Length: 114
Length: 112
Image (cartoon, rainbow over the protein chains, first blue to last red):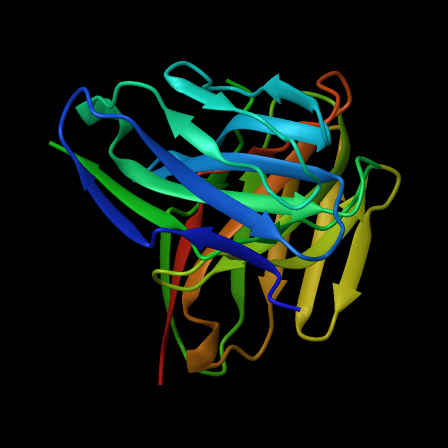
């Protein structure tokens, strides 16, 4: 199994541009989520999904959209990039939404917005 | 924010020593997990402790949980240079459904 994969690894955007960060998992996990990691802030939840067709907001959703058309894929869209969105983005998945499920993380996408 | 806080922010020890890091959180939880992140990589799950448990062991890891103080500690015994990484606690609050909240992390350096 490839686990959780993310593309691209690194991206530079100009303010106002849009882009999609890709996330895919091949473990048939129902629960998927997106986090951003900033220095000194730990990881903060952006959006999550408990299954295909179901998404919800996390702690810091503004400026981001998600959709979940398949179990495998959970893309994150930046509608109009801002310098404040410069961060490292991690996608994670887990088998179900039961308590105590281990989350499996992708390698991350480093985004720089100029 | 429901984010937890880890203490200390950074820790430097000699190989063979024990490393202890602490996590404090704000609300009632279902469980607490510890994750490890090597530089430039994603997070890897280490250990989980449920709210009705007080202590758990896994190899060289020992985790304690004190729900009355809303705190947890992670002890790594007989540390190795390969343990150098950042360590994060993650809580699943009882009142937020399917959301996890990560702490700010402890950066551990083990000197050979």
